Length: 297
Figure (cartoon, rainbow, N blue to C red):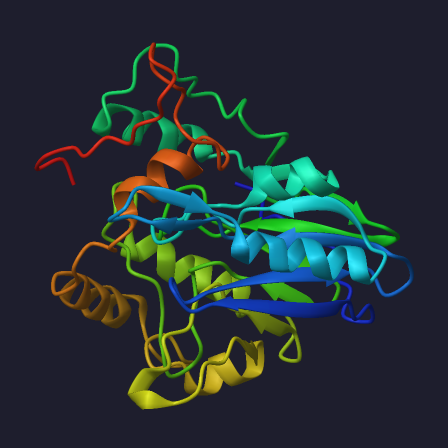
């Protein structure tokens, strides 16, 4: 198989503004083309009070307010993968500001897998058609005059993509800050060997490339952080720094994953996010429900 060549451009430095959601420890981003008012929104959040079954949009509204106050134009709403720990706010933001919702083409695999888990009927399309665009490895797109590209980085999920915009890369859950390590690989479709190889695709970017995390949990009580560099990850990542072999990584990852609980919001998150952030269709009474598969995960 021919190795993909990526159009790396470390000379372009987009303006990146982060929005931290303390309920899910998620960081969303507005990424602005340095030469225009065009921007992309990465990994937005829709709020849920799961115990009460209530949806709200405070997190997404913060992004919408920022975009409007700064006179920006949203061209893309990027999902790095189908998140299992928060619900996407992409369609809500799209309804207010426009833009195209994009995710990796292997969303089809995720939809097929979890369509069965949640016993979705034939009306649930498993072809990714809920999204405006499905990215393939090496696909390029533009935000204003800035050329961006998608790298397929599976392992955490089959549909994980790292999006590189100038000197900034948005890694989703593939990597955490150096003292946080790496993503789990035990969800359906996950694979620790694939994750190791994906991490090294990211770490093959220039050392000065800025890396932006989708989550941070403040290990050992430190303050929340979400930005590092390829060079720092290669030197200091506790799971995948230079010198750690694939066999060592896989053994560590599998042993660690066996001790982890399922994310608290995995059941609502997957059902919503595999639909591009939309809630399941209403029933004949006009009400919306989320399913709980007993012993299904």
